[in-house]
Image 1 (cartoon, protein in one colour):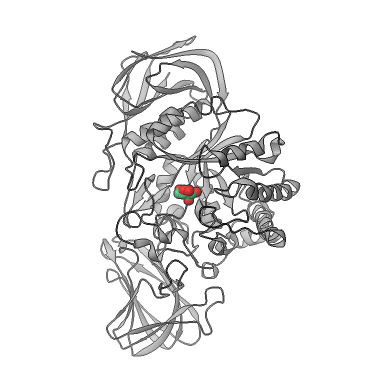
Image 2: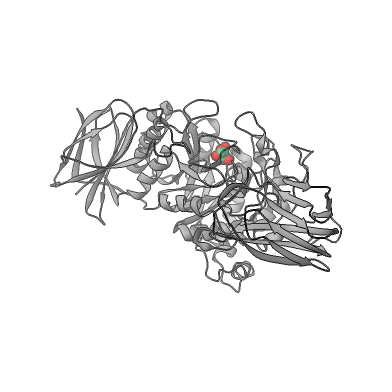
Length: 614
Ligand code: AHR
């Protein structure tokens, strides 16, 4: 029999109620074509040839109909930030259509905002072919036209048609089709089902916007937060550094760009809607160290540092400060309450240390209230990792609040490292397990199986037991659009109209919803992984058990407490290889189990259980 021996009077450590959070990156079409509610692809004709794919067309995703011609133009554009627009010459009845990834999903009776900029003299019809369709009389110079389409049927593979009612030539820019029903019904908002799945996980924080996307393929396409705020038409379109990666044969990421319709303002709003802490990551003046050795210094680096200071003002400044005013103009007078800021994503060694120190000095002088996060490189062990901790040793606690650790590792590694944080030096900054996941096989596609999720749960028991060290933890990556995926495994899989949650998602959710107020010391037999704590709010003991192996009978003894009843939530399936799919979303989902005894618990083979003892 397996055993868990708890002494109710042996208080362990306090647990941060926001410990389990989210990592969001625009990878796997996580933003455009994913969480961002926009239904059109390349809505403003701004795609451009990149150093990875020099043949990318600014007209990508748009097809001509009949004898229509479509050209990319730049003379007298709608704005100088995104100067490309399209010129459509067509006879009556002809026009263009947008294929929008693998089709636009419409729900019968739902309303969709449609808008575009146009110049010329023409009667322009807008329709998906499954709605009431609208005709606009376009006349004169650039103007903004908008209307509402109501879907007359539900379809998942619609296109958006822009056709002419008369023979004409018309210039078009920034076409948008947006569901009225977004998460919390925000304009320029987020796909409701995807954001709801985030909310339902009850995350404590959201780390954004990445990931490698922060660094870019090189500094030329790094993430610049200032390009992602303000009017959506003047957010400078950028190419996505995941353009050259793909799972599977088909090269779907070739035309992967960032419209930044989901930008920093929207990320902060999302945090507010999810009731979680915002945790932005900024470029530290270095490109991705895997791909280039680009760095900036001197005056150029000052600009990056200034960007960090300006971001703090954008988030927290009063509405009369320079950047606070920008936030207020966008609709949010009240500050967002930014506390955490990460400098650099996966950076390492002296070049990084030098730059971090400059950021740290400038930020702590002006904003000592901001808790900074430093990188320890791309892996959880090795020379770079050790160098990072060596560099941090002996520094003042205000130098860095947390160290970001990343590990994409095997189940075996996780199981052998569940005690990793037991022996961490408590005088060093806390740990942010900012990216981790169990990779069942070394190469992709790697399944999001029950086995992977149980191994992650075992590791997370170690996070919880060491909550005085591990302050934040987030699985990575978050979203993957099926057929548009560069990286597996992921937490949530989507297509254009639906999603399913993985066993790993449920493990994250079960942890996030069942964090104790403090841990209790317990002695646990070697054949299971566990964490034990007390929830002061509900007056309940919480026991978490990750069972990576055959079924076990677990004897739970709490000395010094009288336990009356127990309830459990159990995540398991008939096989450790079980996965959820769009066709079977519930192959691995948690089930509520009423325990016959408050003392003896049966942990099924390959399972993660949360037991609440009253
Ligand atoms: O999560 C996928 C990638 O893994 C992230 O972009 C990067 O930080 C890490 O290498």
